[in-house]
Image (cartoon, rainbow, N blue to C red; front, side, top):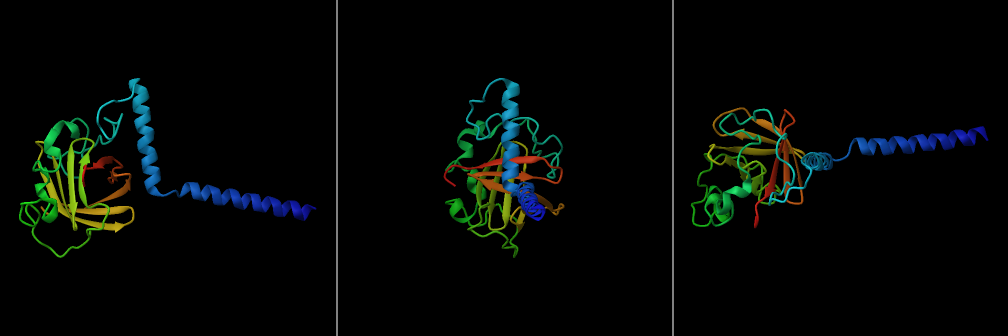
Length: 211
């Protein structure tokens, strides 16, 4: 009888351990999006009402990136700038903002226009989920195609360079200006993209309509 109880206890302990490990090592994407939802809810509660704007990130404003970004002061990824919906037609296809994208992303523009000098870095292919146009929660425009990126913000300049996917949760961005490469954690869910820099700041994007 004692041996039977010991076996039952061992099974229960093993099951508990497996369950704990599964929770501890949840996919990074789910953890990050849970964090986003939690911050959004907390902000809404603090404000006493839910946001009704057209933002794809309701209730999220300050607190996401309080420290300077890796891109320098000319292109801070911190709250305070105009929101993406304030740009009106400039932010949508056909208005010219997507002219940074070569080929089929920018009809009427020469292939490769405004991209860095050609280089053999086919890190991202057309099938990559990162490809396309993304609108930042704090005013950024991030355009990605075939291992290249172009990041800009209203009246605050732009950055461009090369993008390399390191694994399923990390991406390396290298400015073409010769600056230091920066590795970001990333996750995609329901046409939303979140990047987390080495300082643990979260950078939020939604996929542009029609992309």
